[in-house]
Image 1 (cartoon, chains in turn brown, yellow):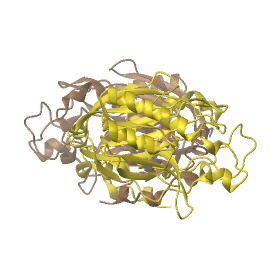
Image 2: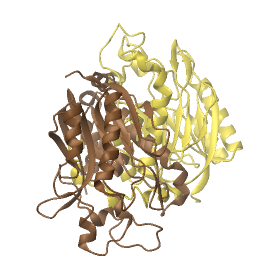
Image 3: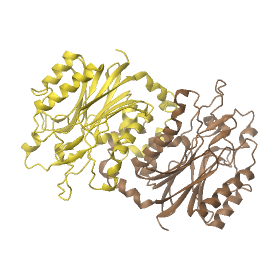
Image 4: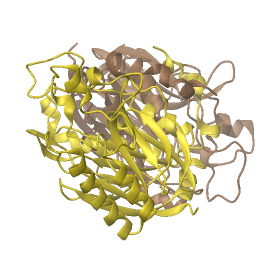
Amino acid sequence: MSRSFIVAGAQLGPIAKEESRPAVVARLCAMMREAKARGAELVVFPELALTTFFPRWWPESQDEIDRWFETEMPGPETQPLFDLAVELEIGFHLGYAELTPEGRHFNTAILVGPDGAILGKYRKIHLPGHRDRQDWRPFQHLEKYYFEKGDLGFPAFDAFGGKLGMCICNDRRWPETWRMLGLNGAELVVLGYNTPLHYPPAPEHDHLQYFHNELSIQAGCYQNGLWAVAVAKAGFEEGCELIAGSIIVAPTGEVLARTQGSGDEVITARINLDRCSEIRRNVFDFAQHREPEEYRKIAER
Amino acid sequence: MSRSFIVAGAQLGPIAKEESRPAVVARLCAMMREAKARGAELVVFPELALTTFFPRWWPESQDEIDRWFETEMPGPETQPLFDLAVELEIGFHLGYAELTPEGRHFNTAILVGPDGAILGKYRKIHLPGHRDRQDWRPFQHLEKYYFEKGDLGFPAFDAFGGKLGMCICNDRRWPETWRMLGLNGAELVVLGYNTPLHYPPAPEHDHLQYFHNELSIQAGCYQNGLWAVAVAKAGFEEGCELIAGSIIVAPTGEVLARTQGSGDEVITARINLDRCSEIRRNVFDFAQHREPEEYRKIAER
């Protein structure tokens, strides 16, 4: 497969609490069709793309937790997305809440090939927010309560003619995420996010939410010489405003495409995985210039 | 001492190959006076601030190397800078080439208190460029030939009412530098750079040199919740154009002051070290949210 291809980011507008999975999947399918029509070979959907961002509520029962989670992938309600991918011969990335047969809960993303096969899975490692109910907040951010920390590391998968990695939402703020993916050989990182515009513990930074999103992604790309497609669930969802600003970023850190609204919206760009070497063979030639023995504290608890 | 104070960045325009140390020190002293007049308690000078950027030439003899290095600090030619600091009661940061009594060569920076005492020393760890003569280049970048890798780690020093760290030029591009300084408690990082606008191995990125400088520094500040003063030696020096763009950056990643030219120029901003906690107690509360056991590869050769 060619290492130069068109990639799409498929930003989602808000998903209502009572919106059904089939209704959401229909929205995803519509964007998959648009991505294909615009020449894309891979379309990236956001984090937890099948439901509203449920960690904003304190659950009253285990059932109320589990209703947000998928016990199989594909399942009956997500099968149409896989079928359409096969029909159109387009790959996709999807974030969803995963409940394993052992009863473990993860914030998960998968990479699916144009033949409908799951090529890779990632489980979110940097879970933000809090574990306890905090009634002073206008909304909760209970990811540490709903999910276990991911147990799959930061792998890069052979796919689309190169090496693809994934991370999810808050992971993108951490330089360690990008460095681990870079060291593992990722040439393209795909990720989704649900990021409230309002951050209750430090509201004085609310106006910087877009900036911090782009800054983290651009730095991660430049400092590791890799591409990224970063896709939001955006807009005013159940009383909570989520930032938009989905972007496709080059290994130079340059933003090549950006959404213009807060609803369902597709962006595309042609990417060439060979361009990673412009950075990796030069300023960030890791073998030549990294000094790992000086970084020990980074890996110590 | 108050944790809120005014800091100055003192950008240097070009230094000619034949310009004498006393002539350069006079330029530094003039900017130190301006910084003081504008209320600064600390003034930051760039990397290798006493000479032209000599690693651009292949040396013909050991003497030709050693002429660029200081064997004592202060020495007779730099003593006026220390004397003026004591007279004005202002601290400073200075980059210079250090030749130790054991004959070791380092790219070094020191932090000097308003009483003229050296409070801390750093030796550059990420040496860019090459070790061998490469005649295809319009100018050499022989830092790996002129200098040994620094042997002092990334310490943070008790100074100016808080914890101050240093790094030098290419160090600023590496997220590990900022993370090590952050983990060591730095609240303000001061640094200097000599960055050619033209990067011979990848000239297609020349127009991004300013962007990459700011991106790396802004990300380092935000992702570690610390302040930075980053100061250039700038302008057209011995046939080589150096980027300017000296900046003072807040723990939010926001640029609060920026030089407007490529010559000798002072910028100032009021910084408050207490603002680091806005970031460090929240999104980047390391104790709560870092996952070091997932980062092992970062510290492995």
